[in-house]
Length: 140
Image 1 (tube, helix red, strand yellow):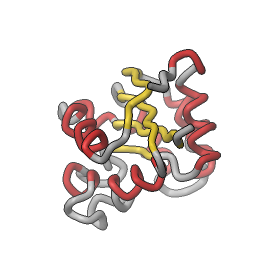
Image 2: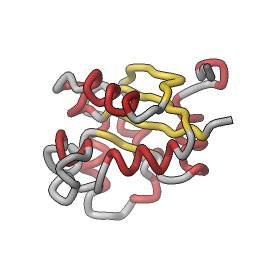
Image 3: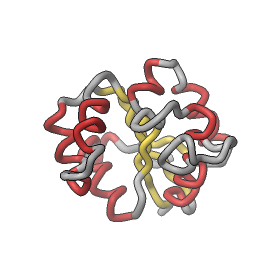
Image 4: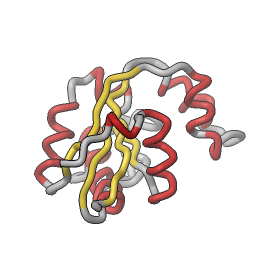
């Protein structure tokens, strides 16, 4: 079975109508979208989601930003899906991201860096389970 990763198109990507462009980039790289939904989650959800960052200077701003509007939540499948997604996303800070990466091309500033990508298999499994039930993920 192919590796799965969670990719969240953050509020700035949704507001700026970038869902189609970003999706095409992942599809062009050979990845398959196996689950997707539009959602809007409260700050309490994001406090739990980003719990490992609690106490850091950017935590409150990140939580406020992520709860500021709808997000597009996706699960992608493919060989080395996590590594590919992270490479395509680029450095977390758009100012440090390579110009050809998603964050380098579309990111505005922190925390408006366009996408969140799981950073490990364990993180992907945990994050996917927060958004999707097993019967909402379609291997094809």
